[in-house]
Image 1: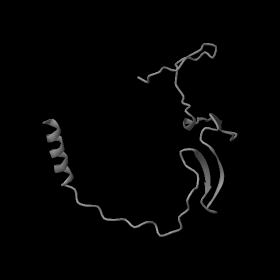
Image 2: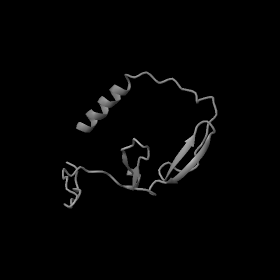
Image 3: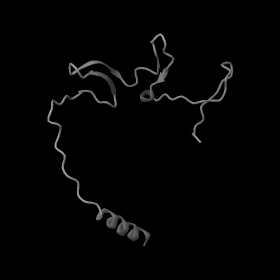
Length: 102
């Protein structure tokens, strides 16, 4: 009975919206990046329309900013790496990341 009520209410709300107007594609030049964005990171130059560099998404874990004023350390979540604050400031103490994030 709840399922039938849910379907009825859903159809009622769907009928309230006006249909969308079709939007035409961008008339300019379209460039396709050949490698999958899930498997590769690509550096694309918009001015030349070329891929300047690429690497596999899991090819690195940590990246360090190289600017003289840089202080950032980046983690590649595409490789399955994440940062977890253990609340521990001592490097000599070992800490394990919990299985659940609560």
